[in-house]
Image 1 (tube, rainbow, N blue to C red):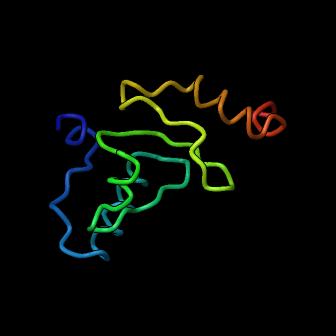
Image 2: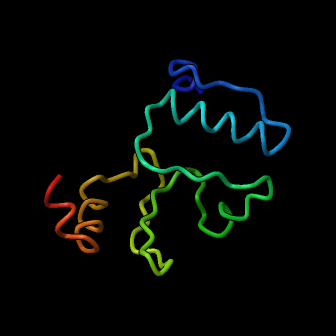
Length: 97
């Protein structure tokens, strides 16, 4: 993918969980991702459970319930929709931003 080459996040496929975690950490750092990221296992159980492909943003409340699911990204991401969902959960925190 052109953007991966431009952003210098092109890597060979990892061969084990440790290598996968190292590559994920490198991508988070190189792309400047500022929010917590989680890593799915090689079994891709999370991806299958949440249909996370191509890309999705989820907001999950403290009870484990999905309260916001974006359209497929990256072009389906709508920061205003996510902000509104965050505001509905934590109005005082979002208002301070």
